[in-house]
Amino acid sequence: MALVLSATQGHTGIITLNHSEKRNALSEALVHELIGVLDDFRHREIRAVILRAQPGIKVWSAGHDVNELPGRGRDPLGWNDPLRILIRTLQEYPAPIIGLIEGSVWGGACEVAMACDILVITPDVSFAITPAKMGVPYNIGGLLTLLNMIPLPIVKEMLFTAEPLPSDQAFNLGIVNYVKPADEIEAFVGNIADRIALNSPLSIGVMKDALRLLSSAHAVSPELFERIQGMRRIVYDSEDYQEGIRAFREKRKPKFPGK
Ligand code: YZS
Image 1 (cartoon, rainbow, N blue to C red):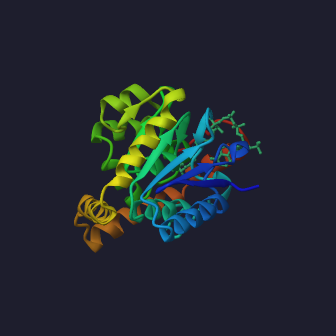
Image 2 (image 1 turned 90 degrees about the horizontal axis):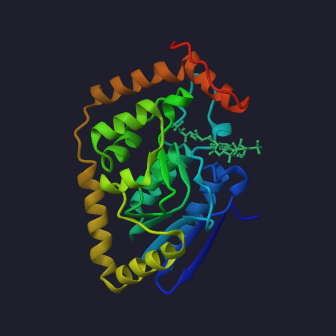
C-alpha cells in the first residue's frame, strides 16, 4: 500500500499522507515516497502543491518515526535524517507548497507544516513541538524553521511545555493563513492553488528561493556552530534521551533523571 498518494488537477499537485495506522509518522519509507512525488511534480512543472492527510483525519502526522531514531550517542537529527531531508526538499521546492491541515500535528511534523509556504487549517488542529518529551536535542536548522514562523516567546513556550498550540492561537499569531471548516477547506485551498498557477512560475520560484535564503541569513561562525553541536551532543548522549525513546516504545510516560 502506498504511504503517500498523489494526484494532479491542472497545474496543481496534491500529496496525501496515507499511513493512518501509524498516524502518518514520518518514517524513512514515507519520506522517500513523498520526495519521489515532489521530484515527479518538479519534472511535470507543477505550479502549486497541496500537502495534506486523509480527509477528516484526527492526527495529521505524529512526527518523526520514533522507532527509527538512533540509540544513545548518535545525533538523532543529523544532516541525512529523513526529516531533515524532507524539510530541505519542501523549502527548496521551486513552487509554493500549501499545507492543508486537519487534526493534531506532532514533533517533526510541526516543522514540516512550518516549512510549507501557506497554511490552511481546520478548527480542530493543534501543533505540539515535542523534543522535550523525548529527551531529543532539536537541531539548529529545525529551530530556525520554527523561529522563522513563530514568535520567540511562543516558540519557547511550545518547546519547553511540549503542549499543543490550538488553531485559534496559531491563527491570531499569524502562524497560519486561514482557519476553515472541514467541509470548505478543500475547495478553499484548491482556489488558492488555482490563483497561484495563473501567475508567473518563474517569478514565484525565484521569490520563494530568495525568501528562503534571506530568512536563513543568520551568520553562524564555525565556533558558534560547534558550540551548539557540542551542547546538543550532551543531550543525545544522555540518559534522558535513552529514557525518552524507551518510554515511547513501552507506551508509558518517561521519567527523566536530567543527566
Ligand atoms: O502500537 P502500534 O504498532 O499500533 O503503533 C501505534 C504507535 O506506536 C504508532 N505511532 C508511531 N510510531 C512511530 N513514531 C511515531 N511518532 C508514532 N506515533 C504513533 O502508531 C500506532 C497508533 O498510535 P496510538 O498511539 O495508538 O494512536 P492514538 O491513540 O490515536 O494517539 C495518537 C498520538 C499522535 C497522540 C500518539 O500516537 C502519540 O502521542 N504519538 C507520538 C507523538 C509525538 O510525540 N511525536 C513526536 C515524535 N518526535 C519527533 O518528531 C522529533 C524527533 S521530536 O521528538 O524532536 O519532536
